Every structure is written in C-alpha cells, then in structure tokens.
Length: 119
Length: 107
Image 1 (cartoon, chains in turn brown, cyan):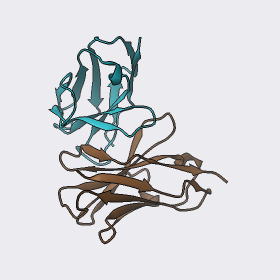
Image 2: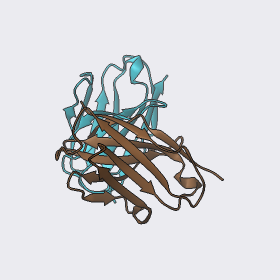
Image 3: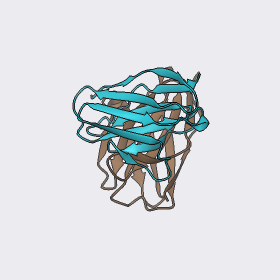
Image 4: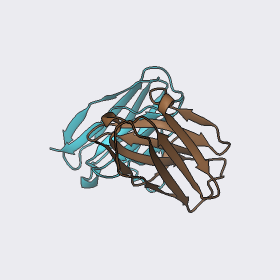
C-alpha cells in the first residue's frame, strides 16, 4: 500500500515562493498507473485541486493557479513536489498530496501540511 | 471548469437514520464521480469511486448511484462515526473539481 507524507516550511512571507514535498513509500513513484496530485483546503473551506503529474512527467494544473504552480517528480528520491510562487495570504491552507490509480479517485492521501502566509 | 452542486449543504440526523446527499455536475461527467468523507483535522477518505464502486474497507451501509449529471450518495443506518463532511468530486476533466461539501451532524 502506497503511503504519502508531506513536508514544507510552515510559514512563508507574502510574495515568496513555497516548496512542498510529498514522500512516496510502499510503492514505486514510477508506477504508470498512478497520478500524483496536490490539493489544498483553506481553514473551514472545501477542497481545491491544484494539479497532478503523470509518471511520464506530463502535468495538468488548475487554471486558477497555473501561472504560479509547478509540480515535479524526483524519481531518485521517490518524491514529488509542489512549487507555488508569489504567495499571498489567500494561499494559506492545508496542502495535501494524494494519488489515484483508477478513475481519478484519490485513494491515498498524506496527512496534510499547513502553509501560513504571513509577514 | 465543471461546477458541482451538492445538496443539502448540511443536515442533522440521528444514529440509525438513512441520509441521502445529491451531487449535480454542471455538465455530464460520465461515470467519473467520486465521494469522500472528511472528519475535522483529517485528510479526506475515499468512499466511492466511479459513481458506485465501494472502496475496500468502507462499510456496506454506504452506497451511491447515478449517471451523467445526477449522482446520489446514501448512508443507510447512520453510525456515530459517520458524522462528518462529505464531498463529491468529478474526475472526468481537469481541473478535478469538488463539490462544496455536505456536513452531517448529530441531531
């Protein structure tokens, strides 16, 4: 069973770039059946899909964030990453990594990492 | 983007009740509609994929059906551990959008 674990800086200043990492264990990040996703949830709000990356390296992003988001995979370290640039207070949220194997249904999630944007 | 409308936004129920949550996409999503449960402070947990496929380990009191642009999640005989927020999600086209959620709390 694949397991995911997010890590990140916690606190970021406005206008900076935040980078989050999701460590993959219990399975291969090269598995072509998996898509590796990032999502976020503002406090007390619903879920927002940020984007995902295929094992081929192909990426798909939410148009609302596309200009500021990059998702990448490092197969040597068995992790995938999210970079979000020019952050504002509105980017403060719990960020989750997740993966799906069939039908785009995300069946494995990390526990989430909180990003707070504050000066 | 495909918008998902969930109804109701919240409901109060008692243990043993049967509850139904609906999800209406703004355009057809074929069978690519999934349901998640989320408890406070926790990551979402997949309940149902592809309209009606019950995920491993999910109790059989959870069921779902639908097609195209109308989907239903039913929880029969609500248990104390079922009080949570439920989200539908479409994976038919990117961005993979979520409904706003339905909060189920204890009456």
